[in-house]
Amino acid sequence: MTEHSLWRFSRALHRAINDRDFRDIEALIDEDVEWALYGPIDMFPFFGARQGRDAVLDVIRQLADNFHVRRFDRESIMLGVDSAASMLRYSLTALDSNKPISLRVAQFAQFKAGKLVSMRVLIDTFDLVEQALGRAIHLP
Amino acid sequence: MTVEKLNRQRVVHLLDAFARGDIETALSCCTDDVDFLTHAPIDVLPHMVPRHGKQELRELWQTIWSRYSEIRYKAPHILAEGEAVATYMHAYFRKRSNDRVVQFDMAVFYSFRGGLVAEIREIIDSYDLVQQVLEREIGPLITGARVD
Image 1 (tube, each protein chain N blue to C red):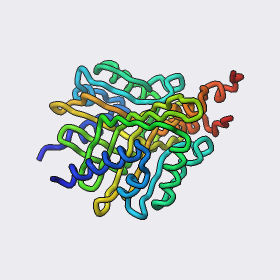
Image 2: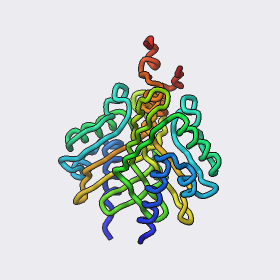
Image 3: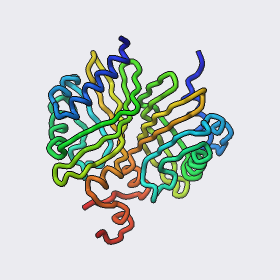
């Protein structure tokens, strides 16, 4: 039984973010990949939609520049033949401030011939912004 | 039919019922002790607190329908495995107050027990959702600039 593409991609992604080793992740991303990581792009420029491997690698480099993954737990996971959906809890460190950040993340990935062709990620972004600011946002 | 296909159909049935405002049919897809959790700022969206049991979920869904006159979903990704289903959805909620449409993406993870939904977990791009609900940018509030 071969390993699901998600596991190879996940290991390579964390190696890229924590060790700045981008070789494996580059080989696992399709040239025409579609990528969307939704959130306020004025605060976090790596958010937004991207098309193509180079653009996605640039996002991953920006993530590596800004965060260290201390721990992640998959709270829920579903694997299809060439797809995967998971809900994860990430414990990160913001590198500029050394602040801990805790996030719930939903990932929907699609693979083709072992390479990532689509990734959609949703985050509780209001909570992320408050953690990054270090204070609550007071709304009218 | 596999349990995955059945559960996928059950989720679509629940979503269709909710989207046409048939809350009781949507609730009939859930266990009596259904557990609902979303991640959103409850000072802005106070109805989005955790809900336990059908009555609390009924109250949540009634509150949503009291505020929105039309609810539509598109679910481009639905994955099912065993007793779990994950959906990635584009949601469109039309406000009763001014007819504006709140449009957001959401991930919803369902767990089944005995053919019924026992657990619902949602993740939403909550920053964008709050801006659309309030109809104002949050950025100026963060930076302290005057908000028009």
